[in-house]
Length: 138
Image 1: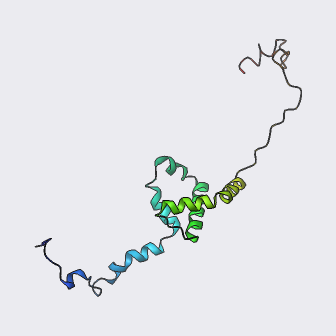
Image 2: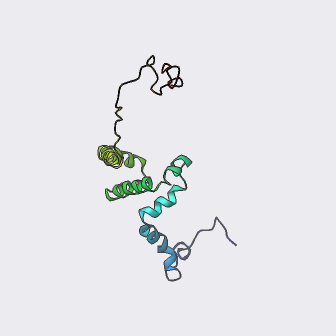
Image 3: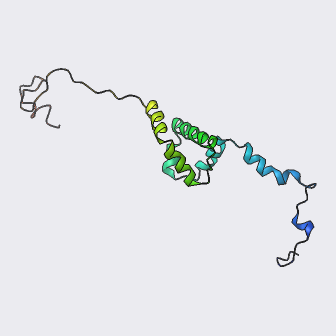
């Protein structure tokens, strides 16, 4: 019967290495072999729903993974929020520049032709003023 107050002997405290060598070392090896993508996939489930929905987009998810890889390469500890924030602040300008390069350029719309005033005749040809015809809902 198990007694919580009983002192453990040296044999009980040291795991038997010959009996189960894989059981002792397997979790460490598994953590080391796990890629950043696999860790992110595992962590996505614990995120709030709003962020989880955004990470379903493959482009956003890939950008997130790329940033995480760069942080890992620079030696940032992912368990330390302070280190991650410090790294993000130090690399803020270059991250924004990369993001600006990914977004399509917005072109300005230039209207050709004369501007129609409210009291001008409507261009549809009804003979009414623009404000009483096509411009009524604007």
